[in-house]
Image 1 (cartoon, rainbow, N blue to C red):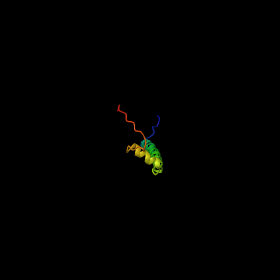
Image 2: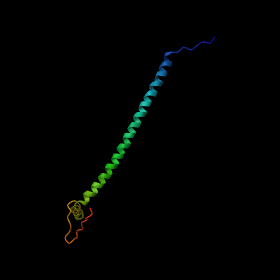
Image 3: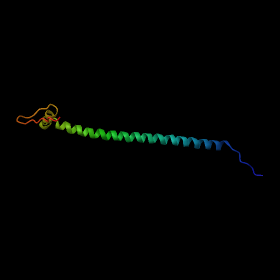
Image 4: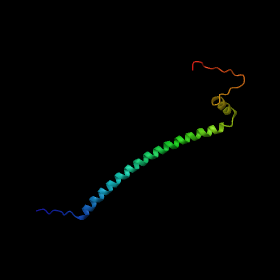
Length: 92
């Protein structure tokens, strides 16, 4: 008759350890994926803010010019230069 091996405590500890490490690995992996998604979103935000900063600095450098003052006076205030003819669209 064959002798049957006993199920000892070290086998149980080994099985529990593998289960624990598997569970921990799964949780860490999902956490890493979530952080990567957040990182990608923050990278997009940084790029958008960088573009906005470049546009604002370009606008800042143009503020003190005569062309910018004339543009604002024409667009926002409705001013015209002396001698210019004004055409009004009656269809609107």
